[in-house]
Image 1 (cartoon, rainbow, N blue to C red):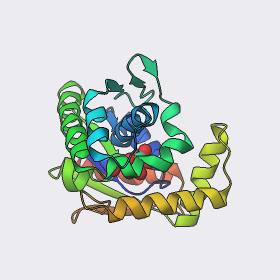
Image 2: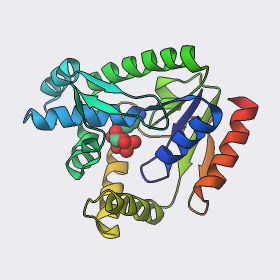
Image 3: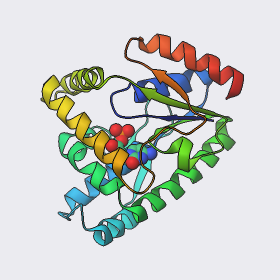
Image 4: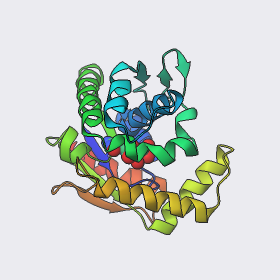
Length: 223
Ligand code: C5P
């Protein structure tokens, strides 16, 4: 198992999926779970800061998270929400939802169950998130903490948004990335931080291919 943590815009999702493909492993995007619950909260018209109501929605929401690295489909009920969970409305609200301890407990339980299932099926899994190496799977044999400068992360996020047809300038993306990182790092329950035994990889000056080669080598030794 590989635990891949770090802030947004470090190339984490692309790296995690390509690494999983290369290793013949499964893939779990833990952030997609917080996003799908956030979508359910917004659709219910609930206040994202109302911890009791949000926890209730998180407990009732029926969703699936695909674990195939080439097409990880996310559904809410029977609806394909793979694209909808990447919208700006979700980016704005997801940190409030993910800061609620009971929501985290529910989703972390589910993450651990999925990890066990995928490991049983494929023998390997790459899990991406913010607290995988610190909280979800502290025994993971390989923990990676990806970083990149804020400017590079904002430029990547803006390019991703434009490619997906969402309006975004690098300045908007920078503000959004900084805001979310601040909220994710400063929350009381499982804040974004590297595990003590994580290998730090700064992706600012590296291509995705270079990152994959470096991580596959580490996984070969330790994963
Ligand atoms: O990785 P992604 O940007 O999709 O994550 C969306 C949000 O979900 C993060 O900004 C964070 O608030 C939350 N998250 C989390 N713990 C994780 C993964 C994501 O709190 N393991």
